Length: 440
Ligand SMILES: [Co+2]
Image (cartoon, rainbow, N blue to C red; front, side):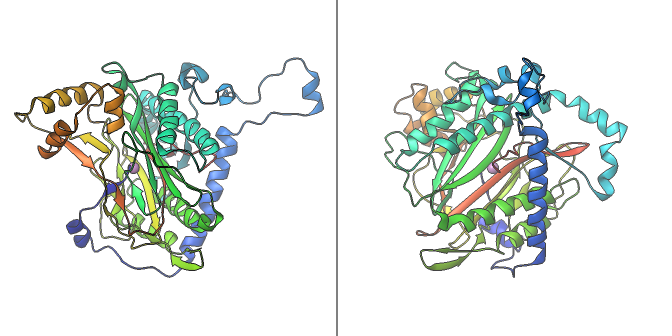
């Protein structure tokens, strides 16, 4: 889920505008990102059924990998991930060792001890990440033009709830595990925070570019990860630019890294690409008022931002931080505005007591507290809890700054935008790209 920079703050940060020349940094960076990714896949996720003659003859042979690969998952996915990986032996994400001044951390006793203290936190995060991977890989297989956005959102959300084992229909259940935030399905010039509300009949088209951005949480540990789907090869360069920009951001992240500099590297990679769509060539621009962000327990947007353009923000990444590294590329202005009907909301964390005069607002706040707390939700989630005629109450909670509305964020009409996003843990000993998969 994207974080947005207010226009005033953007001016203060003196972010760089316009395209940068295609630099070497971008190219070499891309190579590294690919290498790291490939290595990880074969190590942690690839399942290699050995089919040598000798192995076949034996009636029983020991599985090559100690981890059970998720081959017994169903289609659609309905088997709890906790059953596929007993005793919480969830797959690791991509572990990347720290460099230079921080290289000592890999083997340092004190850092390893600190890391061990977090084993429950890690298990929750790895479970949520495995749910995300299994659901998104199924989604990538079955989502096709001709389906309604409502169908697509429900395919993803029903699968997430089944794999976490929490349907979220009883009070408090969605708080244990389930959707970390609503499944965003933003099309074309819209970059983020669009999901259908009740009655939406929109159908995915062959020519569409769709950002699929959903969160999975286990005990409040939210995995925030997104990808882009397109069905026409003309968009390939746009998607590649953004995928590589996100990988560059993931690679640059680490203890003591300054977020403004990471933004510069992301921008350089992103803006080294151009894309030809229907006979017109467009430079790919980083969307300068969208950012990555820290993630806190039950809170999708922490206090630190990771810009996707060069900026003078000197904020450092620190041990223990969890970051969503997300980048957005656009063929339009590289700037988004609020546009259209709101679907996404979240209760504000540090809200002081307000005397609500509207009884429907009071009742709705009670429902939000008991089901979502500060986790983002959408109107469809209120519908499935049986809530009716709640808009007046919901708007009142927004007016009173108790609930924040997250309207769709769109670039100029006719443009195309893409997004890729990973969640990374800045562990004491190592950086873990928790949401890394074979797909992205
Ligand atoms: Co996000």
